[in-house]
Image (cartoon, rainbow, N blue to C red; front, side, top):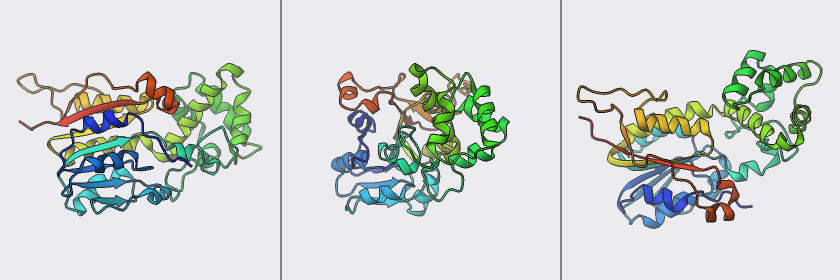
Length: 302
């Protein structure tokens, strides 16, 4: 089974401006697509550290003395690089898309295209599952994640429907949730609607936005001056965090300036607008259609 076909592969690797003897980090190893391309461009003195919390990703690790694989969430980026005495590094890469391999496994519960358990954990050791969110969260909590993570206009109605249903029937399978939701919207918009609900629950289960914030702050800390970070996002919530942090140094997008009018931020955006896939790439890999690439460079502190 294909694990993952990297989106914007050439643009991402080129954007890192790789130095053959440099030290680089791929915090979302997955199937190893981006890491393989980085290794092709490194000399024997170069080093690559790769992170992935999914135990199945470890099966894709290639034998290469320059590669160190770390089976952990990338929120621990700084801790492990410090342990390996690898700080500062020349570049960091992140691809925030959920692995297509994970989406295509019914037992992982990420996709409404299959029948399976309501799981959605990227790290199977985490205690919180999609089923627990649906069965145990207060209505106010459900409303918050549906409105803010799923960007649903009818979040209140969805939350009410979920709470009413679970009074008599616990949520256990994807079909339990899917069958309940399909009644709420016309068939022509069901796919988008279900995708938004599943996205909201998945983000909550894996604390995705919180982890991205931690990653962005740490990436700025571990980079050397002139080093670059390249980030690929797939929906507006992720992209907004990256855009704001690169632009302003915070996640609210508030610009703080010094006495000379310079924006106080640790990273300088390389591309003002996100880089998106070409029509040719989308035709070959439809799942890349929503990918956006942003690149920033570590600036020297005045």
